[in-house]
Image 1: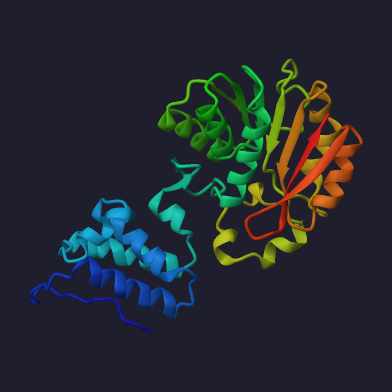
Image 2: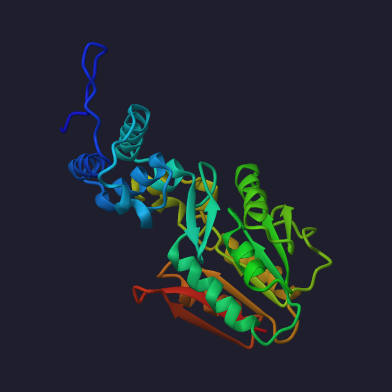
Length: 294
């Protein structure tokens, strides 16, 4: 095991440079068999020195303060112990914007950006559309849609208080005025009962309960309420099909993210209330999105 730098009061501190802490941090992460060790070390160095990762190279020769060095290696230790990088730095980029994230909310992922892009393409010919984002979490979907389409009226539904707090903070942080945050349960038929949307979006929990124990350690740190889709992984898709799709008018659409082995079942489920359904592959070529037109 690579030891952490030790100092005593009697020792004269020899300041490390930004480049040196990045190198040592990366070595520690690699020794702990952490993926993306170089990238994580760079992100943490940028975070403790107060710069963004794109300008970090300009600071490589700069000395770090004792406080910055201490914080950096504490953060490295937290990563070694399985805490997600995003929870440590308390933010993550999504669709070109930086969202607040932390314990209690699902971390935004690139696959979900494709869901947003798919939605925006559907909305391009619609004026002042109404959009509902179910299981909104951090609000990355709802807020991104609202930012790209300021003429849209967006409703973001989130049940759990921890995630709902991040939803509210991201609405304020990004500065969108057209998102209505709703603290509600999508299984409650009274939620948004009087709203007729043009588009429904959701990245709901879809992992089978029996599969939760086999997830990566970092994923296990995310809220189980954002992961557990029930015994077969389809609990949320069934209520989307049986209740929420019935709110859509002719020509309206529902689009969801799901697991790579779930698109066929969800497509057939949605076809019961839709004229057509299709699945889309993610950047890795895996089927991860289902869209259905009423």
